[in-house]
Image (cartoon, rainbow, N blue to C red):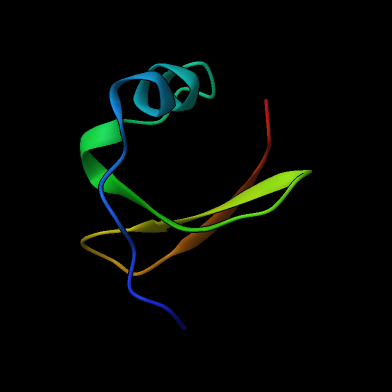
Length: 51
């Protein structure tokens, strides 16, 4: 799995709409229809729909 990267300001605002703390999540993969997020502490993955 690829290393996650830090969220930008606009990405973190979007992640907040899913009731997730953007400080705890990294973006691993951005596809056209979904984003793969990785928790920076537990390595748990979560898929959210792309905006």
